[in-house]
Length: 276
Ligand SMILES: Nc1ncnc2c1ncn2[C@@H]1O[C@H](COP(=O)(O)OP(=O)(O)OP(=O)(O)O)[C@@H](O)[C@H]1O
Ligand SMILES: [Mg+2]
Image 1 (tube, rainbow, N blue to C red):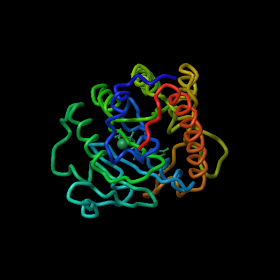
Image 2 (image 1 turned 135 degrees about the vertical axis):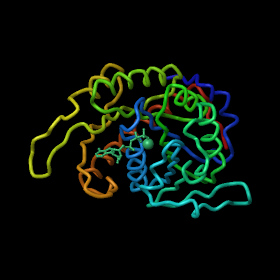
Image 3 (image 1 turned 90 degrees about the horizontal axis):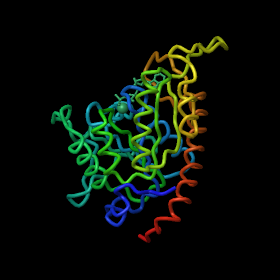
Image 4 (image 1 turned 90 degrees about the vertical axis):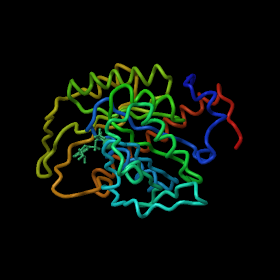
């Protein structure tokens, strides 16, 4: 697999703070509200649980949800040597969020280049130190926002999230086409909210239709990393702390690690690995 994204030359310009970050993975979807944030967080928790050094960057400038999930507040952010942000440590992961720093502005109207500029700045001015995986929870948005993020961030791989409905899979198809055009390796597709299974029954209810994610994965030759069931949320809960979901995210993490290794092997044949 080749990698002709603009970052090929930019490899030499990888910011100092990211040089010891081994894998940067963006979680994308073409539609909002399909579970990017939920999946980014729980994947990060699973990787950390396996002993990897993990960072989570919440790049959702419009409505950051991670600070709420992780009970983080902007007062917790430290600045090192007057220039670098020290990420928070939450549940064993290093965490930083647009929501913790861009609070009083009105980013809802930001266009793609502004979003990607701000995210890139946050990413490169955070003191990540050494990380095995940095997971980026991306904002929902029109093609404009997604496209500039994909072009500007030094990602090594993408995970694409969809829900089973036709409207979601057809949007996701456009998203996949865009990522492929930029030749960013896709590590796999996740179908979220696939079905509902009451805890007292074995029956699965396919509320939003069945097989949309699987068909899409087949169409593009992608691995379907998981079909994640809908959880009836009675109260605030971190999915990874529920046994059934822990198993699901551990399985996703395993496949992501494997696919990242495969991608790296094929890319490193083309791009000489830089010593840092
Ligand atoms: N499998 C699931 N079961 C139950 N609730 C879920 C599931 N996945 C996500 N949710 C919930 O659905 C809502 C939307 O999920 P989330 O915020 O992760 O989506 P998103 O794609 O990040 O949205 P946005 O595009 O707005 O950033 C959240 O309240 C989240 O907790
Ligand atoms: Mg989100």
